Length: 280
Image 1 (cartoon, rainbow, N blue to C red):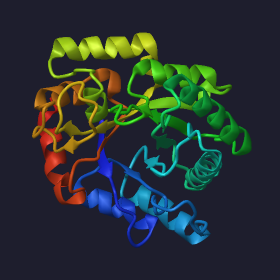
Image 2: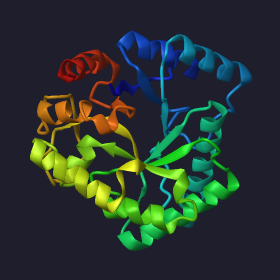
Image 3: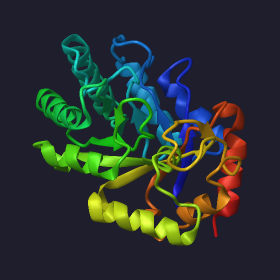
C-alpha cells in the first residue's frame, strides 16, 4: 500500500509536524523547514532536530519530504537572483541533511523570457554548484513536474530528462510527479488507457526508477491549459478514477503520495478518507 500523507504546517516548530500529521491520518508528510517566503532562517537547534526525530518515530511518519522555498529560481537570468537562489538552495539542503530527511523537492525554474533551453542548462549548472558546495549524502533532490504556467520550465518530461542528463550528478536527482501540474501540462491519466500511456511515456523519456514521490492534487483547470490551480480529490477535472489507478498501482507501493489540496489541513482528513476508500 502506498504511503498517503499531506503537506503539514511547521507552526510552533518543525518538531510538532509529525504529531499534527498523525492526527490527520497521514502515513507520510511533506514540510517546509523554514518560512518559505524568506531567504534566510536561523539554524535548526540540536534540540529541535532531536525532538523532530523522536516525534517522527513515535508517530510512525515514514519517508518524509521537504519542499524548497518558492523564491528559488535556479534558472534565473538575473545574476543576483541566481546567486541568492543557489545559496538558498544550499541552505535548504543543509537543513534537510540535518533532519535526516531523504527527499528535497523543488520547482526547476523559470526562464523569464530568455528561453527554455538556456534555462534548462543553467538549472543543471546550478545543481552542480549546489551539490559540489553541499554534498547531498543520503538526500535525493527531486525536480517537480510543473504546469508550464508563465515562463516555468519542467512541464514537459523531456525538460526534466535534460536537466538530469546535463548535470554531473544524475544519481543524486529524481522526480516528484504532481498530478495537477502534469494534467495542466497536457498529460492525461483519467482513464486506464491514457494512464498507462502517460506512465509508459514517462518511463521512455525519464525512467520510472527516477520517479520517487507524488503530489496528489485534482485540478480546477482543464487538460493542457497550463494553469496551476489545485482542487480537492474528486472535485476537479481529473476525477477520482485517476487517483484510484494511482493509489493501486503496484509499481508505486513504496512511494510517498502527498496532498497539497486547497485549504490545507482543514480538508486533508476528507481527502485522505477519499483516497483510502479508493484503495483495493
